[in-house]
Length: 198
Image (cartoon, rainbow, N blue to C red; front, top):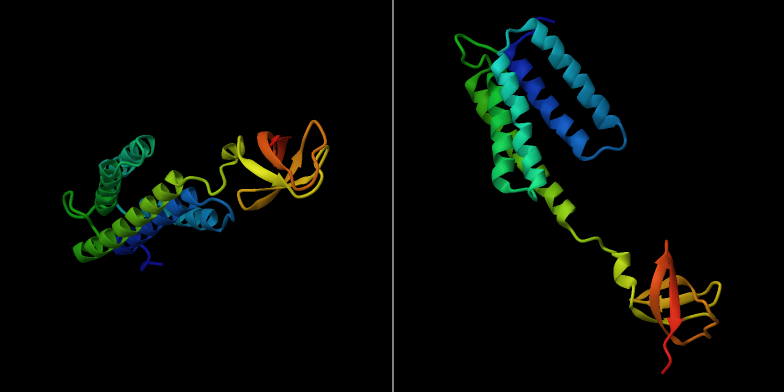
C-alpha cells in the first residue's frame, strides 16, 4: 500500500479523475464513466488524507471551472476554454505539496501528463462545441410551408412525400392520391396539410 501513497501516483490519479469526471459530465448515460469517476475521486480523497496538499492549488483547480462556464455561456470562446484548462492543470500540478510550495510530483511527469491531458481536454471540448453548434439534421419547423405530394388519400390519415421522405399526414378535407399539398402545421410527427389548387 506504501507504493500508492506517493505524490507521483497521487498526481496521476488526480489527472485521471479530472479527465474521467469531465467525460462523465459531457457524455452522461451508461453510468460506467460516472462510477469510474466516483471511484477515482474517492481514491483521490484517500490520497489527500495521506499526502500533504496545498489548499490554494485546490482553489485554483475549482477556479478553472469559471472560464469553462464563461466559455459555454459565450459560445465556447477558445480563450476562456484555454484559460480553464491551463488554470486547472496548474492547480493539479501544485496540489500535492513538495518542499516549500513546489509540486511533490516529478516535473517530467507533470509536463508529460499536463501536455497530454491538456490536448485531450481541448479536443473533447472543441468536439463538444461543434456538436452544440451543429444545426439539427432534421429541423421539423422547416417543414411548415413546404410543398409535397400525397402518396395515399389523405384526410384523417394518409401519407405524403416531402423533401425526399414519406411522412404521415392529416387534412381537414379529403385529398386524393398524387395531389400537390402544402404543410400548414404539424402535430408531433404528423403533418397537417392542405391541397394546392392548380
